[in-house]
Length: 247
Image 1 (cartoon, rainbow, N blue to C red):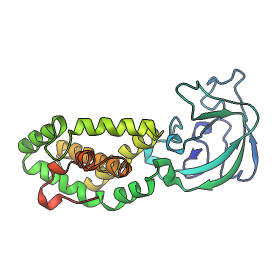
Image 2: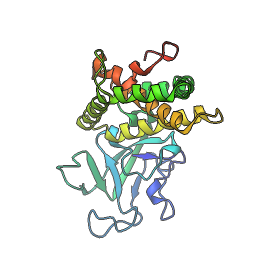
Image 3: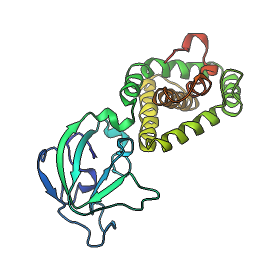
Image 4: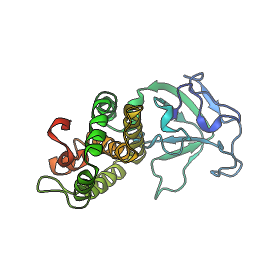
């Protein structure tokens, strides 16, 4: 289970608040359990858990601005359920849990979450301003290059659209869809912070945010694709020599 930094389950906030941080090693009974299982009679009608950590940030009501989150290993007790085995086989719902321990939050971003965070924290602050400057230096040419990248790629990489579709498929197959959604948002937000006060145009800021998300996805899927796909995610064909940086 994931919580914001204070350890309180976000969906319980403003109701009967539940703090996982205060209950490590303890059993917690849901304070206001739903009478009909497993319906949302309130925003917090049962405990929501996952068996695949890459989906732990799904449906938590936590927003990316709250990162870093805290991640908890919990054990469901008593009757469990989900919203349907076909679409949610990784979900567990219950009215009673044991909070076992806190674990590393980077795991919520997938198997390479630690590397993703490193790229977001240490590469994007330098790269985003360069990407924005490339755009604002020649918006017409950069717009054409981006459209070519998006639709057809080049001899060395597939198209941007195809690479993003493959990344979505891979995340879904490995139960990292929630992780990937957060990775995109965290990367785009990092780019926005790097551009604050620099006078970049709105179009340049949008371009830099999209490039940031693509680079972060390339790190997430580094072990799953070859250079033909990873290069498209990174947008290597869009870089001027000065702003190219290997991941």
